[in-house]
Length: 323
Image (tube, rainbow, N blue to C red; front, side, top):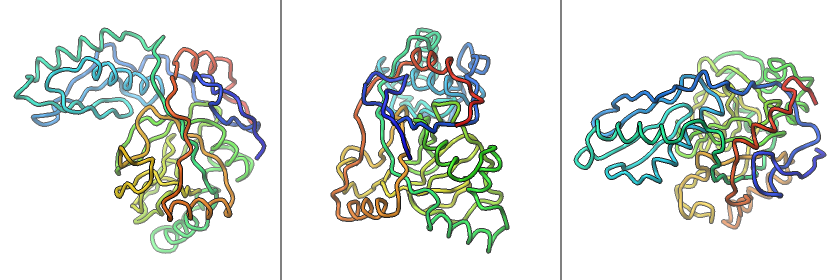
């Protein structure tokens, strides 16, 4: 694939973003704010957790607000707050009720949300990871074939994605899927599994989940469900449409590799991911480095993601443009 290096518009670093010359295709309209609540809604989650809802639809702007809100709560260092778990449109706040009462914590959370206001002008730290991906690999193909033979007949996942999203062929699927950075909106379902939102609206792909789901999925599988891309961190059941695999570990409970020295999971919410197409030879080379413990994860460290710069760039795009 031919590409060119240039900065991704939402980030402050000249080395950011591998933008291919074949970026494509379906548009995702930026949220107007209608789905973002004026005030957060609170629900008890047992006796030690509060569920905080900031909106009722999935959008990048709403998720950016979730992470901005989580950052502000951390900065406030509220006595009694134990942990924050940001999700796509909500936030779980775990707390010690012996140190802060439910109503007192809600009062503090309301004040912090009010201090943020709109997301305009907010910048968040964001790491960028380059993820090597072998598209149309034999392992996910075997998984799909097994499902079709034992559970239910269906169109092969890659071909289904091509037809459903109006693409010309599998080659365009690769160009579209690898043509954007992705925002790590949340972690969940399985340790280390991230929900990735495409930052280039022209590269948005959608697909329904399996019905019924698969009983197994190869470790490292790349899949799409709804408008979200994920990488399966381990061999697990699953329901996303699958069409690629990455030899790069994103979850390491043994913490053998340097990237996992401080955390079992590679990604954090607010990180960004760029998929880099590779061939089978490169896949096997990386797998060998992982096996012998010498693999170095390709990332460019911490940068700053500007919501204003990102919005300014998105406004220049034609979301219906094809490449």
